Length: 388
Image 1 (cartoon, rainbow, N blue to C red):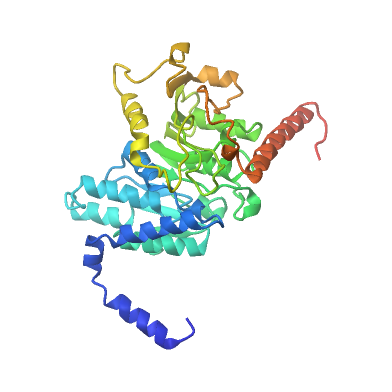
Image 2 (spheres, helix red, strand yellow):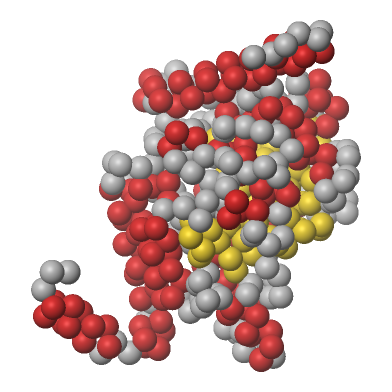
């Protein structure tokens, strides 16, 4: 602001707001609606900071955060996951009034933590948290920093991690520079996967949105997936519809897993896959994504915990028309630990409009080439050859 009178007018306007009434009247929901509108209408990639609310609500309901648990988002964006988790807990505790004073203080100041690389996006996230009654520590709920750099290693281990890491290569800014990862990679999403399962407490649970290339990338990608399935029980994979994120051609998934131990092996026995991509409508302004689109998946997810095994289809031909199937760890291992699993015939697959954008195809090709190069270098190293 270049005019002092404009700053004075703004301060006076803010000072005149009845913030208690504003929260009661849903000003936070209005603000988040504006963020969503901006994300869907901006062509510059702003949508990477905003995950569709129906998807967030579905994930939070299935993860079921509880009062007293710590919830982390290492790629917070505008804090949608953390705000939804807070709202879920408040709804279960009469807006925290069922808790004692110590528990309420924890929920307001310590239960939620996120990290965001982009200062402007962090400011949006902090305002979003403020309008939803979330305070955080002295830095607020969302800290400014690069999770894939030294700042990320200082994030605490958490009971729950919910995240939609940004898509793209390291050249997009904020590339991986951590020295505490077991597997070195320039792929942002693979690096975020390592952070997430390393920063989960034993017994903790996570849900993370990831593009398809993370599921099939060879070399270090396979190593990280194998490490994940050793240390965690990767129990569910949801294949998401195309067209629900800012880059219409990007195909994404949600991985649900529970941490067993940092030193565990063989924690994953089977992976249940739900295909919500094949033969789905083209989502957009005319056909918006709603919570109802996840109803069948949520029912199958809930049924997995039933003692009689209802809702747990076997990996047999009789289920070829079902959207929900389970695959053994041995079967996945025989496929070079690839999680790019599909069995439904997609009648829309030949539609050119559904093809990924050239940049996405190029990134997937680079991932395959990098994986092949890494394998060749490993072979040369075993043969005693010097790899330059």
